[in-house]
Image 1: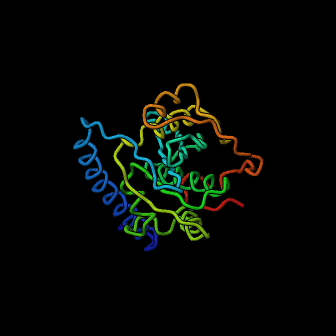
Image 2 (image 1 turned 180 degrees about the horizontal axis):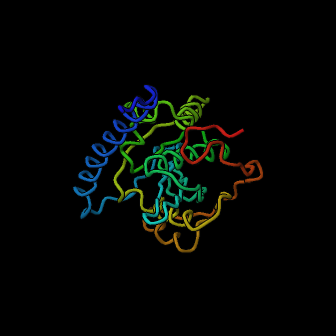
Image 3 (image 1 turned 135 degrees about the horizontal axis):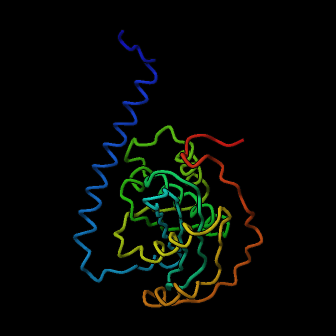
Length: 228
């Protein structure tokens, strides 16, 4: 007897396969770009005067698929303004990178920054955010990121190599070992402050964080289903 699967199911499988293929292609390109600069001394670069720079990253544990995200905000003098780390559950690498971007934008907005340069070392994620890729078009997470970008502020999105995203990587590792509650850091953690100091200068922030409320994840970790 021939199988007659539901047409919609077949379309979903094909669509997911195409997304996976595109992710693999772009990940290969990203890996090549990172290797080109692997031996270089290129470091974090400060934003334009009056702007802040938001660096974000994500880390997925291969054996358990535990996902940690992290990021930090620095001003035009390289001074630490805020950082965050969070465990968000289990999902793919690409979705993890999108979660990091979403969480980073939420904190930048909540802290009152209106001129933000956002940097991620995921080429695929930055292309999605800039509407240069059709991957995850049906994702509630991507829709929420674009909604954040449409607020009354200026956000410039850049793809950077891992050399320029080193501190965010450290914070994502911290997030992977943490809890679902966001670890918001208005002071640079001791194990990270020396790295920040090498790239700029560390100044502890006096920002009042009382306006930031603890949030549950608005979607399931797949990024597609809105939680009610």
